[in-house]
Image 1 (cartoon, rainbow, N blue to C red):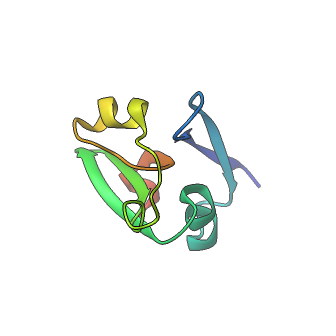
Image 2 (cartoon, helix red, strand yellow):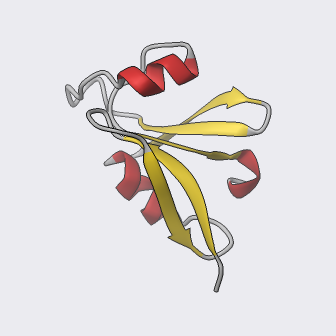
Length: 87
């Protein structure tokens, strides 16, 4: 089975490919990447950033790289992928 790739932006560290098996990522894979419940931020017509919806409440740190990419403050780990993989 062919794998698909997204980009993982850890809150501290360097962006890296995030590979999942299958045609679409599973909810479990997405939640694992962001460390909890997933919230979608649509950052371009074909791109979505997935964040931990409880990041502020949990006291997660600011993700500088993802904040620059999204044009707004982002907290915690972020997974960026094509919107076509979400539908």
